[in-house]
Length: 171
Image (cartoon, rainbow, N blue to C red; front, side):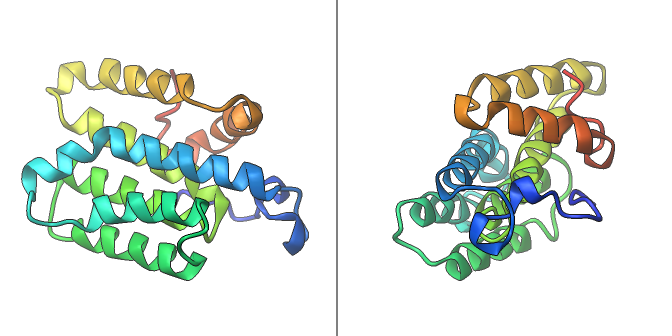
């Protein structure tokens, strides 16, 4: 479970009664896509013929550009997560990261899912004794790419949801 039981109004768009602007929603989607793309090679090494996670990341970006409807991006996210079904470890987590990035168009709070799964993918891709350090490096890489406009929002979200996100944001 990576979503909170109670929705944070900061991740609900203004037109739906929250406080999230469209501009910030777009920034969240782009950041999530960057997090997922950073680990995509872990999936593609295992399944080079399966385009679904890459297509999900592109769907998130296409939604931001206004080229895809929210439901299309959401569907692409579901397909990416489907690509993970029979996998384990790093490839599975990388596909989940891509799927989470695409569904940010539907629920902005999935931004943390993309980041958390990307960290899990990196942790799973290295020997156990290197896992924690690799995860911290990935977490810092993600934080370095946070746009200033959403930086405090995401960092606070990481603090609030770290325990339901496998504590991957201890970096």
